[in-house]
Length: 361
Image (cartoon, rainbow, N blue to C red; front, side, top):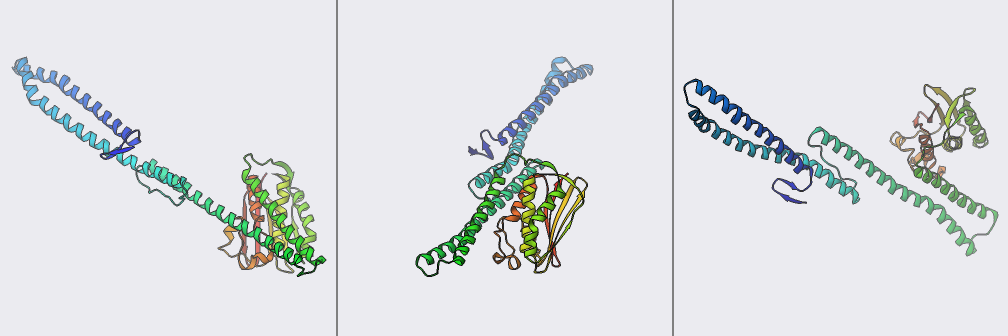
């Protein structure tokens, strides 16, 4: 495309708007000219004849007094319409060109590109949608970078430990006793659990079909999950409270629901204060049902609370690496619940933390 004059020449919207405006103006001018010269001329001649002028004289007077004025007015109207059309085409085409330029920047990897809001309402709406898309892409790029960095960090720690143990064994710095092999097994098990969690996240990201949901008794599924977790809860010195109705039907994937409950209960055990309490509750609501897992312990800071479901996110201080986990469990919870059409959330204050999720009924 090459630029000539005020707007781009080619197949852009600006030239088409300008051409359309000029054609409309020319049509209006043609109708006006025909009306004045034909209809107006006949009426002028009739009136002049009634007042004693000849037909030839009336035509001459009309040509002298009116036709010249009409020709001048037509010329001025054409010039004005062309100028207005060019201005209008340029005004409408400029924001679209800016959007196109910003789109090319985003395609090249510059996700910070934005476009100003200018032009008619439809164009500003398009700019708003484009900026929203760009912000979403920028956030996705940030999360992808953090995910790669965090995944590399999570893998590097156990691998470094394994390498250190194996080098020490090779150089006979430490004895090859049961304690050493248990430490090696712990690090290998950590890698296996991390790889499984990553597989779960990758499978959820790659899924294109909706999750297969079954009609089931959510109460029975939650009781089964708490029964499986009870030995771990008791070994941690915690008290378990289960508040569920006798029966509560809902729609969910049984395997996904079991994994969601296992992750939430494991999270509650990991971050509960010694001698604390874990409480599980299920309640029905109009249109859906709500499952809550509450634990006593250090509260999550308000600034960290909105991010707890992000991948590899850890709350500093009270919830650091020393407490275990890779920061993936809650991400899996959100992914599986949202795949079933539900929602997740977290609340933390006054030494109590509550994670909840909803399921359709």
